[in-house]
Structures are given as structure tokens and as C-alpha cells.
Image: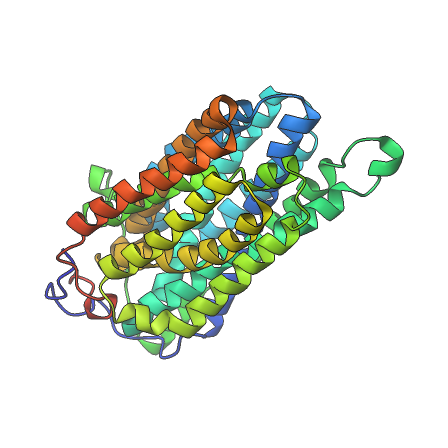
Length: 418
């Protein structure tokens, strides 16, 4: 698996530096789309629990329905990306997400929230699949792992900014109305989705490649085959990501936990998480490429287990803040590693299908995780949820040690020949 001997890179190295204009734009696109996700992840659990008076398990249903939409579309997202092009899919995904947030902002019942969370899932499947494939293609072939690590930082940054921004926006008009303004951040998120679609429309890097190399041609799927929807060679990284995102389902309730315990460091938590994630990636990104994915994953999992156990055993604010450091490093190490593996183990013409397969694993794990940990919180409290997540990650570490024992460093992996 990924032994680096499958063949040479499948195309010429059209991009000679990581921070080229196409890569910067796809990061901006991913940032805007992820911001819409971070907004809904912050606002909707609080709205369902505090605004509608429902349970954490009910809040978890939002993640379940989001994933139903995402998974159903994910099977086709890779095909659409490879068949109709990255630019078209980027614009379509951004538009759908933007419109879904507008409607979420005006939804007043749980049924309507579930409907438009499903629609958001469809848009997310399209934009994340296409942006991930695009990012891998506009990077120098020998720096894909490092570049994907930088690309993945949009999750850390939006995770830091969105909660603080949302809490501030929800406070606007709260004193006079007597309730939080849940609508405003969702409507602003809708505009971000539309802005993302415009940025996606500006990406036309394939035209530039043809100017350099008139012979450039990407093979498109012909007909409909099961391989158009699932890339077998990306299944192991996708499976790894599924287990990772399952445990992260407990982390999605972090803001609910902090507000329930009346911690004063909610905003600081997410800022620390982002700063640590960015620092780790820029300081050690190229070094991670020289290590075996198994070793990077095991170090990251050890940090994650420590954070969950500290939270579970103490339920204290100091552990909450410390966990921000640990989660930041964990997120900067693990997800980019699995993502880069998935993209480097396939030909470039299959990058859409590989991206779809990878994110399918993420979607399934997150949906199950949010639902399961929501139920655990209702039954056993946050202590039970955090300790369960920590124990699960210990088991996951054993699985990683076994399944990734033969992998070579990311730098030595090469795309198979077409």
C-alpha cells in the first residue's frame, strides 16, 4: 500500500511553487465554505437546545440529516467533479450551501432545520470534493503532502473565528428581544457561500496548463461504473478518517459543554486551537512528509486521547483550555496526513473520485459520532462522552498501527500511472 513503486507521477509538474495563485484561491474558497459549516455547527446546537428546548440527542439529528444529504451526493460528487470539471462543481457547491444557510436562518421548526441541513450536506459534498481535488492538482507533485497540510488549515482557522463571531452576532438585539439572535450569523453565512461560488468561478487553472502544454488532457469518465463513484485505492485513508471523525463527534458539543459549565474561555479555546494548528503545520509540515503516516497518526492520536481523558476526568476549565492546545496539534497532523495519502495513491484523473471517497469516510463517521455522543451526553453527561471518545481512540491507535504498518513516508509516495 503506497509503497512508492507504482510508477512515476501521472502528469508533468505544471506548478513549481506551493503558493501559486490557484492554490491561494482554492484556499479562500475552502475557507468560505468551511466558515458556513462552522457557523451552523456553532449556532444550530445552541438554537435547538436553548431556543427550541430540545435535547442534545435531538441536536445530533442535525448532523445525521446533514450526512444523509452529504453521503447520498458524495457517491456522485466525484463523478460530477471528474466529468463536468472542478470549476463547475465548485460554483454549484458554493451556491447550494449559501442558499441552504439563508433558509436555515428563517427556519422556525425542527423539521425545516432538518430539511435544509440535508440540502447543506448536498452542497458540502460537492464543494469539499471539488476543492480537495483542485488543491491536490495545483500543487507541485513532490510537495502535495505539505501543501494539503496548509490547505487543511482552513478548518482550524474557521473553527477559531466562527464561534467567537457567532456568539457576538447572536448577542445583537438579544437585550431588547430577550432571546439570542440565531438568524443573523446564518444569513451572513449564506452570503459567504455565494461569495465562495464566485471565487470558484474565477478558478480556471486548466486553461493556463493548456497554454503551457497544448497536449494536456484529463481523462473523463465514460458511461457509468461503480469505480466512477468509489476509488478503491483511497479506501484505507477514508476508513481511517471515518474512525477519526466518529470520535470528533464528541468534540462538536464542546461549545455546548463550555456554555453549560459557564466557562469564560470559550473564545480563547478556539483561538488557541487555531494558533497551535497553524504553528504546527508551518513549523513541521515538511517534516511530517518525511515520516511514515503511521508514526504521525500515532503521535496525533496520543495527543487526542490525552485531551479527552483530561476533559472526562476533570470537567474543569483548565483542562478545557489545555485541550485546545492538544486538539490543535492533533487536527494539524492527522487529517492532512490521511487526506494526502488518499490523493497521492491515485492518478490525477481519479482525484475527484479519491476526494469523494475520502470525504465519504469523514461524513459517515461524523454523522454516527454526533448522534452517538449526543445520546451519551443525555444519558451519562459530558464525562461519559469524553471518556468514551478517549477509549475509542485508544482502540483506533491499534488499528492504525496494524493497517498502516507497510506505508512509506508521504514524500516517497507517487501517483500511479494513468
